[in-house]
Length: 109
Image (cartoon, rainbow, N blue to C red; front, side, top):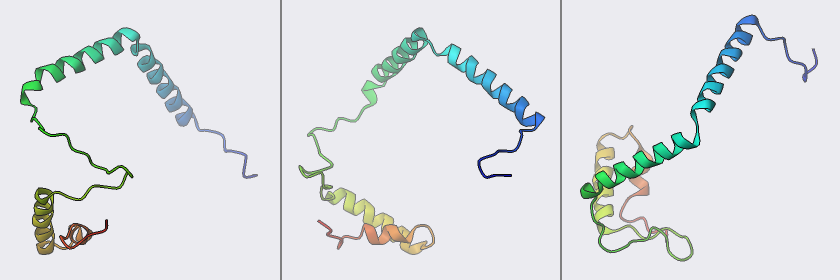
């Protein structure tokens, strides 16, 4: 048999393919403009309902500088990373590469 020729599909595969096609058609029929609008409304409703639970960020912050390089880590993030690093030193099989990448002496700027 040549490489570009495929073997004939079994009856089970054909039956399963038909079932999947029917399921996909059912799903496609459920996706209507009204359903999309309803989902968007529910998302906006949830965002508004949970607005009181949001943490105010205060000043804006940026993750990258003007050259799209990552900003330096804040002292708080360095402390958290150091704490995680000490945990991984205790359990070195968890993820030893994290300890090295977040060490305080890492100045790859």
